[in-house]
Image 1: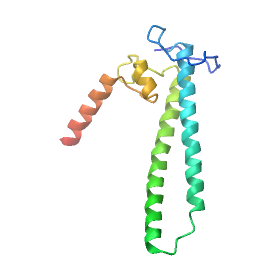
Image 2: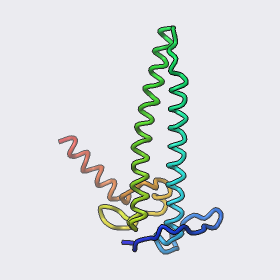
Image 3: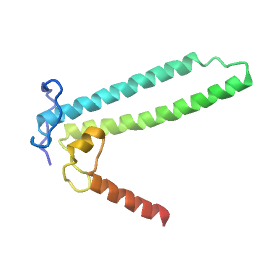
Image 4: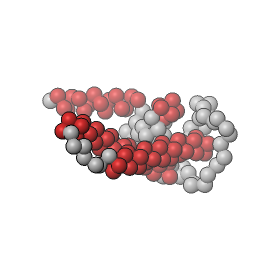
Length: 145
C-alpha cells in the first residue's frame, strides 16, 4: 500500500491528468483525485441546496388537484434524487478518507492498484474492474439462490 500521504496541498500544472508512466498514487495523482472528489462533492451539495430551496418555494399547494398531484410526483422524484446524492456524498467522503489514510486507488479486495482510467471515470471506485465483476457475480449468485 501507499505510505500515508500528508494533507499538504501541492500545485498541479494546468490541465494535469495522471499518467500510467508516473509512479502510482504519487503526490500529484493524490492531489488530482482529492480535487476531483472535492469539486464533485461541492457540486452535489450546491445542487441539493438549490433543490431544497425550490421545494420550499414551491411549497404553496396548488388549488387544482391535477396540479397538486403533479407537484407531489415532482417532489417525490426530487427527494429520491437527494437521497441518492446523500449516499454519493458519503462515498465521496469515504474516498477522501482513504486518500488521507494513504489507501486511495488500491482495491479493497486484492490490494492491487485500480486503473487510473477507472478512477478518473469513477473516483469513488474501491475495487479493480476484475474484483468488482467477481463481487457482482457472487452477489447475483447469492441473490438468485
